[in-house]
Amino acid sequence: MDAYDDLDGISPAPRAVSTNHSGHWGLASVLVGCLLILFFPISLLVIGVGVQSSYGGFGQWDASGLQLADTIAHITVYCLMGLGVLGLLAGLIGLISGLVRRQPVGLPIMGLFLCLGGLVFSIMLLITVNRVADDMWRMINFQDRRFQPPFR
Image (cartoon, rainbow, N blue to C red; front, side):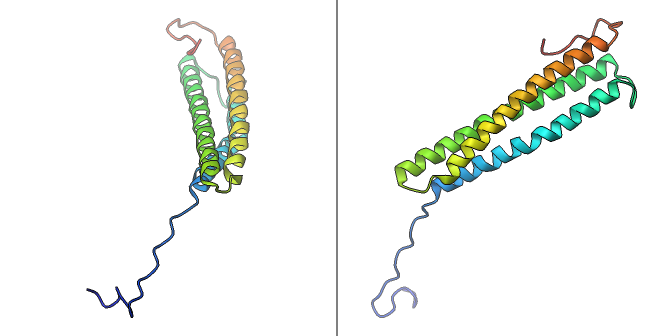
């Protein structure tokens, strides 16, 4: 028996269990939503630089480079949409956990709204990527028929 286990017959009180389970899920959802919202204008700037380069600003696109850029852009947008769905799921888990455990649900609700806005931005980004890619594929002279637009 250790000297600190029992002091004058008084045992230490048990530690309380952490009660911020919904807050953790809500914070994860808020961070994902903020990431999606911040990524939207950065993506538009990158698309704008790509379009500017197609008009002769930094050199012309060739078919293989455009195919690679189109594939990367679509994969990125689909990953962002998947991340938004996971953020919505984290917000829902936090909301349900908060309601069941009678914990504060402010963070999960805010995370749900931010992830919903981030998903809307991701869908708008997908539409933008599709329109820009279609226009750029029309501009390319298809001398080499090996290259076709991906995701069409």
